[in-house]
Image (cartoon, rainbow over all chains, first blue to last red; front, side):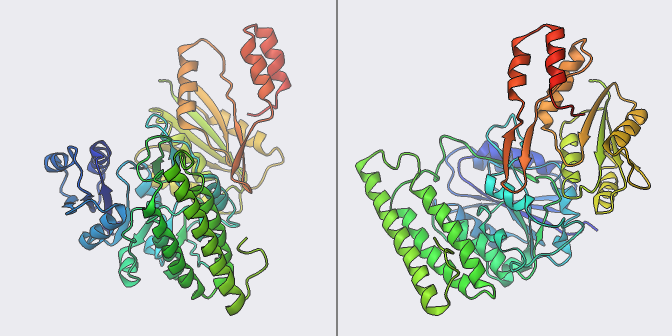
Length: 323
Length: 166
C-alpha cells in the first residue's frame, strides 16, 4: 500500500545544521525515499556533511551543486530535473517534517485522484517550541472555514474553493504527484524574490483535483526568524520582477473557467503582497530605500490599473473586486 | 514520568479530532493511555478515531469507547465514563474540538509530578474559525489575581469564580 516513492527537493544555502536535521529525520524512515539536495554554492560545511552522510539503503541521497548562486527557484528546478520519485515535495533546509507526516500522507488522496495535497504547518520561531498548532492568520482562517471535513479523501477543484489559491504561497506545504508536475510543466521562476507565488497559483490553476488535509494536524514545522531573514527584507531592483510575474499570472487566471472569482482572489492576494512590500522593515531607512519604495508604489498602482482596466473591457469584474 | 491518562471526549468533531489526538501524542509522554470517548457521533469522527488507532497501533495506545447513541449527560457522561476506565497516575481531560500545546502540557505534568499538589490548572486561548485568530480567554484578570496570592483559601475562591472547564 505504501509503494509510492517520495522525492524531497531541498534547496540549500549555508544551512548545514538544517540539512543535518533532515538527514537525521529520513534516517529513521522505513520508506522509499530520495533526497535531492541542491546546493546553491554554500560556503559552509554543506559538501562535507553530505559526503559523510550515512543513510540506510531505502534512503537515496542525490547532491547537486549549482554552478553559481542563483536562488531557491533555480535550485528547485534543478532538483526537479534530478528527482525520480512518484511523489515530490519541496522542503526548505531550515524546516522540518513532522513525525506524523507519513502517517497522515498515507490517509490523504494523493494516491486517489489528487494532483497534489495541501496541508497545515506549525509556524515556529524557535527550535525549542516546534509544536505551535498555529499558522499565519489567513491560512488559519482558510483551513478552518472549509465547510466540510475532507476525510477520508474528498477531492476539490479550484472552482469549488477559490480561496485555496490565495493562501500564502509556500512551496513546502504540498505534496505533488510527479506526473502532475511533468504534465503541467510546473517550474519556479528563476528570480530571487517571490519565486514561490507563480508555482503556488499555477498548482491550483492547472490541477483538475487536489486534496486539502483540513481534518489533519500540521505536517511540517516551518521556522520564521524575526531577524536576520535573508531575502525577505531585501529592498532593491530585483524585487521589481514580481510585477511582470504577476501580470503573466493574471493572464493565466483569465483563462480559467472561474476567472472572475479568481481575479477577486488574486486581487486580494496582490493587495496583501503590495501592502507587505511597502512595509518591509527598513524600507524608510535610507534615501535609496525610499526611492525603491516609490518605485514599488508606482508599479503596484500600474499593475492594479492594468488588470482593472482590462477587466472593464473584456469582462466586467464584480464591483470592488480589485480594490 | 507518571502514567498519563488523556480522556478525549468527542461528539461530531470530525474537523478537529485528529488534531486533538495528535496534539496529545506530540507531548511525547512515554506512558500514555489515550481514551477517546465518543458520545454517538454521526459524522466522520468515528472513522477517523478508528483509523488513527490503527495507524498508531505500534506506538500509542488509543482506546476508543463508542456510546451507542448520544447521551443526555453529554460531555459529563463521556468524561465520567473515561474516568472510570482510566488507569493512569495523572488524568487530563480534553474536548474533541480543542487541542493542547504539547510542550506546555508536558511541563504541567512534570510540575505536578515534582510537587505534592492535587491538580494543576492551565490557561487557554479561544480560537475563532471565522477569523483564524485567537482571543485571550476573558478571564485573564483572575489569572493575575491567582498569581498575586499564595493563600490557598484566596486561590480557591478565585478558582471558583472562573468558568468550570474540565
